[in-house]
Length: 384
Image 1 (cartoon, rainbow, N blue to C red):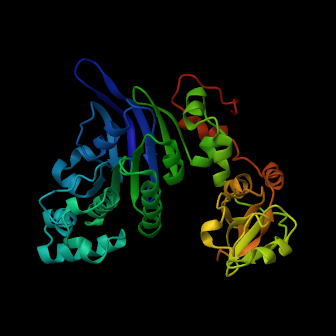
Image 2: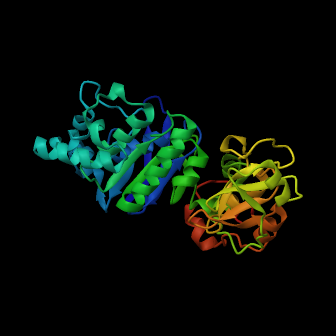
Image 3: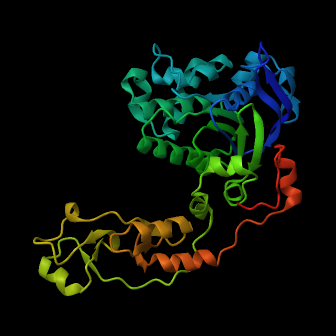
């Protein structure tokens, strides 16, 4: 557990970067610090490993004040991942990852063996270990950065916008890989981002900060979306927060309709005989792959002909996926599949909305949220 107790950071000239910050980052969970530029997110993170020293207050790791540790020794026991990976360009990947174990006294051969293990863990097996950083893509370099932070098996990891320098597709892949690793490893992680969507996806709890380093609200993602504490938090998490909140609501049983389907390779004549509807669902071994317009096609159905606008949602997934499947489908019928990907049926948006109406929002417990609030502008009765 990491605990901030009335932490203040002031710079020469009187600028306050962090102001009376108090919160806990629970053991084995991801706590995300999020907020606009200049709100003290990175300063707060860097005070944990004493790369920045606080002006006053206390930061404790497992009830021990970080000020009682030798700063260099403290940093070696904390994993640290930054935006551009920060790899040593003159060292091969394996030696980049082995750096901290060697600093802690692990023999070089054993440190390199451990480096190869964690590289495989983050999806960089085999000859990646012997490459130079310049031979890797941006996403691969970030994976190496995560591997280096994990190499000494630290209980605590600090991550400062580690995925923000890569393109959106790679970023989503890295986020998914990161969550998979966290499920396996259970580290205590403090993660900084300016992206509320990333915070909602990754965080077990989210600390929203204001400019000037004040804590606005601390809550789990579902609660934060359902009950922002004031106008600042409501604006920051976004006006579409009601839709985003569906990510945290499980899909109840839906009234699925049986959908006419045809396999890949079906001729135009066979497709037109299968339905009178404008749209027809195409499957590959009982797995939905896309839609076609049977009265338009003039050749046997191939993968390149399919309209893939409709998301395939899993019946066990969140309500947001089910609604998105219906809204994005060219037929306006959302495709619902089992966990193994096989087709279960289709559902329309109004039917998903009816299911949403039947779900409950996270309950408000004023006794629980009062300690989280640090703003001077509070209206606990307000449910935005």
